Each structure stands twice: as C-alpha cells, then as structure tokens.
Length: 155
Image (tube, rainbow, N blue to C red; front, side, top):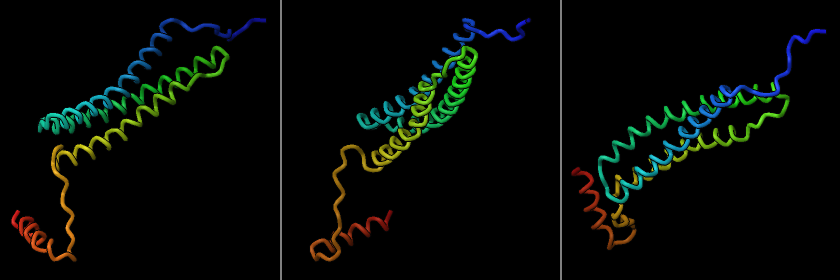
C-alpha cells in the first residue's frame, strides 16, 4: 500500500528560525513600551523637564501600536506552535504565548499608572507641599478659605 501523507518527524530550520523571529519581535513589543514609559516618568520626577510630558504622550501612541503588533506576532507564533506540535504529534507548548500575552496586556496597566502619576506630578510638582485641608466649621480657617476662593475666582 502507498502512503499518501507521511508523518513529519522534524521541522525545517527555516520554520523554526521564523518562529524565533516572531517570538523575539513579540518580546520586544512587550517590554520596550513599558520600560520607556517608566523611564520617562522617572526622568520627569527627577528633573521636571516639561519636554518629558510631550515625549510621554508621543510614546503612549507608539506603545499602543507596539502592543497591537506584539499581540499579532504572539498570535501568529501560537498558531505556528500549535501547527508544528500537531505535525510532530506532541502537545503544544503555549505557556510562553500566554505569558507573553499577559505581559503585552500589562502594558496598558503600566500606561494608566504612568499617566495617573504623571498628571499628579504635572499638577503639583514633585516637591510641592501638601495642600491644606479647609475646615469650614472652624472660625480660624474661614478667612483663609475666603482668600483661597477669591484666588480661584480671579484665575
């Protein structure tokens, strides 16, 4: 009897090399936006450069595109791993794909954190004294609260 579809026992080197390239691109897309956002936030905290606000906003857009590209490469890598495992007759090892997807999605959490902390730093400044709390029932703070209200209305 003639065997029409022989089972593959190995994969060609071009396929495994392409899989490594896909995985490497996905790893770069997962780690680069997160580390750049944290570095920009740290630089703004240390030196209060106003340029870092613009750089952070620009890097947020680039980070969104990088995460989308990384998710696409991770999905392609997972599909190729599943196909290769099916050809070889062994279970697919997708743990790396799941962890990489989690790391890519964690970029959004880090971006929201950096945006929140960055907005607070831009409003208050890193070395600003704490804002006084106004107590309207106290007679001693009444004059200061009126002055504060007048300052707010003038601006």
